[in-house]
Image 1 (cartoon, rainbow, N blue to C red):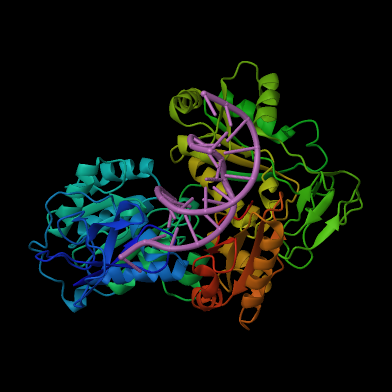
Image 2: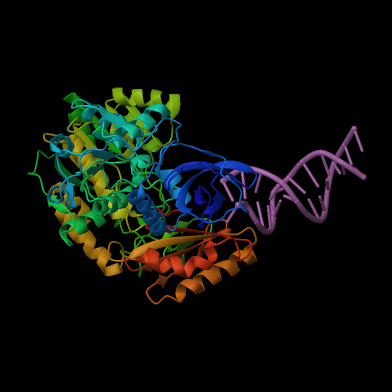
Length: 606
DNA sequence: AGCACGCCGACT
DNA sequence: GTCGGCGTGCTC
């Protein structure tokens, strides 16, 4: 008997081993086998009744029974295919670590009737969406699986759902034993609700199942590393295959999801009645942001809010390397791609990260002929300084959970939780519950629009909306802007999701961005420059041979060692890329260079 | 990805 | 004369 085993290595094919006499193993079971010099864990992806004398033997089983049944292994195959990742790496990333605990296909509950198990996907937005998810789970009969983007959310959801009955946690916030026990309980039909991150996506479910993805728009649902596929896509595909009910929640859905709901009607959308909303206003910041980060309306609102004993959030952005006009607010953009041109001060040039067009830096604004083009913005430190000078008695704190973790982060968090004025980027909003703020003001939200990324508008909108939710009725949101005409501002002010997506989809359609076309980024890394150039050329030529692909010229990164090719293609992009890149995906048969493929990139800065 | 094998500099 | 640098290539 031969077992084909897939390992967590960047090799697309499985390795074959002899199954020792007397062993009973199944497809989908994890085993230990010699690979190279070491013994490693892999997953059995095939069993063949063929002579195997010449092969090495499996060393041991890593767990007593298969973790994946046929359909879920087939789903893993699909995920690997879609993301151009290896099956072994896919399984390693989407499964909890193996545990030697007893396992077994013990009694599962009666299967649902066909009428009970249609595929159905629903998008829950607006106030109370999380409450509605809890109610839906309570009313369902089968297993519910709740996928969240991080451990903090996992803990919160486990607690929230735990009030109704047994909840198993499958994320790494639980001990390895608890995770294994939870998996087993699901398999045996002894647990009805599971919460987890990516490693729970393939958990066993009893019909009629409900799969929830919380905050489906979050980039954290597509962490670095294989398989480079958003958890939302996995949830939807799984729900369709089982079939199961998929519930997606978001304050501001991804543009792709909104489009599927409103244009394609593939996801049901139930708009909630509008809840309380803050007064949203714009403060024109053109021409004044040079020396002072707070416009008079913001300074006034801060004084009033603090006077009333309510809290203030000041949103800032990290510096972006684009060029904007301090007078008219225009951002220097690529004429064909419409994304902000990346500004390099040392090279004194502006480069489009998509089409590689490069033009020399300029000192006159192309829109208004003003002479104050500036790559700078207001970072958190400078804003804090200005605020302290202006409000010397207020308790002011800066908070950025992404910068500091661990003990120092805890101290910083505690200080921010007690402050009256919190200055921070997007991550700082997690300090505040719904309607807990008196004022949210954004110093220069346009900076987000300067990012050379077609999702810049979507990201800014999402941030402003999230802030407005945390202010709620009775408070105020003030946006200091140099681009006061951007549609995202009106949409937030009017509490009108549809208005934003309508404009955004129009923009995406015109320029051929997702969801209308799909993107992939291919990175080529070579030690030797000539070799890198050669490989890049070869990859570019292979891609160029596909009629359905638009291949942009390779762009070298700052240090010139890695090159990046952006490709636009049809919605079945993976199936076009896979054959075109097949020869480069095998062992570096193409010389000394490494090629990486990322389909549907979410953030693509170097 | 690991990990071993393989040809060129500073050491007992 | 060896120890070891990591560059190159394979792993059933």
